[in-house]
Length: 143
Image (cartoon, rainbow, N blue to C red; front, top):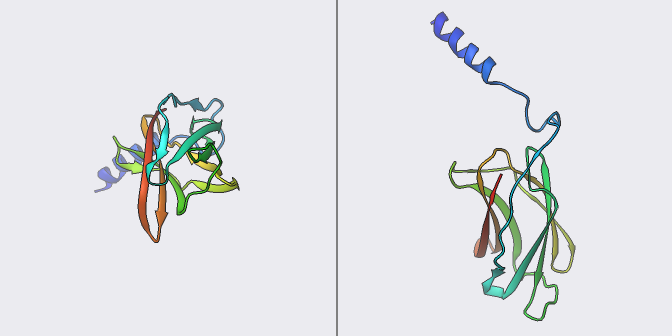
């Protein structure tokens, strides 16, 4: 039993490293967000534009602005609640909750966007009303 405990303790010690969230990493890795197709919430005919203000970065907080426009090009808020989350499909997990701040009509700043490990991620945007998701779009990113 003592031998088994010593082995487990040794594995724990050698597998530990600096946390990517301590700010000690000098150069966060910039990811690839090269999607060129238009994104839309079809149920409300809203076109989604996105602009990375910081990132996408691995091991650091990223920030993105999402704009929603109607068919005339006017900034428009959705009828329901606007939500966002990250999902890593190959690993079966997400990341920390994303903070959403409304800057103006149809313009949202998403902060606290953390890509916690390298690989393929899906960035999901959703419209929700009364607890029901009624529209959802996503796009892939590789970090």
